Length: 347
Image 1 (tube, rainbow, N blue to C red):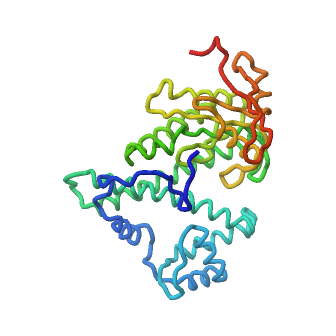
Image 2: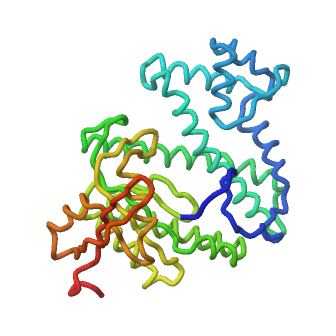
């Protein structure tokens, strides 16, 4: 797992290739946003938004920061009635008891982070696509006016589908968002990512990471798991069924043997209680899986004792071996277990 600086950048990452710079100015999106994404142009200050929504100014400013935006000057006209309505809705969610007041900042930050990353990626894709199209029949602005509402519609569809899928999983498991449940947690990490990134162009590095994330996501979903988040060179996932978690970990570790585009990886996985909150997972089990990943050898899978015990009940599917005790951050006598396929079942 590569270290990151304060801005979240990966050390040694090559500078952007000039060819990757979009030919069209991102300012084009400002015109589209002002004219088509909001019913009215900016006409309000933050104080006016707070007053119209019925909240104090400090609360309005805090919500704005939680979304990931810098504060505006007191007299700056930068808001629309849509901002008023959004603030009213967040207040209504607390009044209805859907989101507790002390958890509202987490709720807003979670959405802000997710949509910030999504918007950054979408903007780059849109502008790069336009830059690559020679001889457009329509001016870029007209193309954006048509495309952005389409993206928004697909985005809403995907969100509804995921909402239904998540609610279904929770209903089957009989848990709520704040529940602590037992599950398998895994990290899959690209081996030698930092050294690789120093030797690759931005485009090549991006292609490798995109393929790594795509294949990993496909494998996680195929084994009944859920991707919790991706962090550049690693993916955090959960799987309810420990046996399927074992097969997933092995499939991930072995993938580079049959797919030359997939980088060599290592996998650490553990089973135990986790706290699921706002789309993320927390707890000692998550920390343990991360530590196991950090000490796993390239192309290998390490599991904790709890998951190993569950997998030992299936000797026809797994071969487990206790490895040497080791000390890592937070664990002085960690006892990892190596997970492999039975000799007779290996391809």
